[in-house]
Length: 140
Image: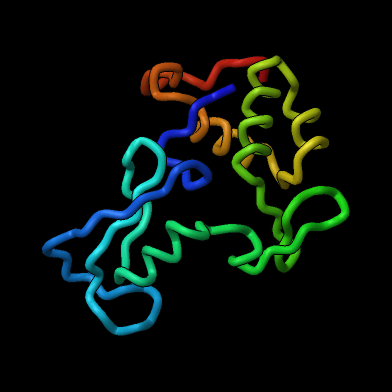
């Protein structure tokens, strides 16, 4: 399994931010006073105290964002599929196990090879990423 730095599926917490000038994205009109922290203390969001407290309690679940579970096991909204953190970890593990691009595109609701490569590159830990100017290795 891979580690995801700062994901919101684990422990969430909040911290007061003393001097932020941004407005809260919830629409309340107040200044953002707090930041929401994900796993390992990575700041993932910001807003007024109430907005951040709700995020700490509920997170961004697919249902909150308007996605519904389809028959194939993926959350979808307007024809667009969303992979959960567990599904992304499984995709990365399948890639590391040597599955080809075609096999991965059959298993997961990914439209094209460029999107698949971008997802894998984002999930790859920095210590395993290729240096600039080299191509991404692997079975494909």
